[in-house]
Image (cartoon, rainbow, N blue to C red; front, side, top):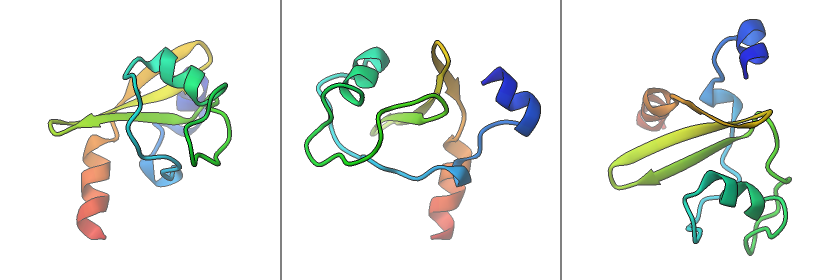
Length: 89
C-alpha cells in the first residue's frame, strides 16, 4: 500500500465495486482471507482475495474498510466517500 500511495495517492472507492455482500461466520480478516481463497462462499464467482482488494466489515453502527496489503491488512477510510456516493445515487 505504501508504494501505491506514493505513486497514486490513497485508494479511491470509485476504483472498486462490490463483488460479494453477505454474512460470514467470522469477522476475523485472516479468516475472511482464507474463506475467499480456499472455500469461496456459495454463489461467489469473483477472484480469490488478492493484494489491493478491499474488505468492508459493517454493522448497524457503520463500516470499516481494510486494504489487502502485501503482508496483512491496512485500515483505510472510504466511509465519507461511500456516503457521498450513496447520496448521489
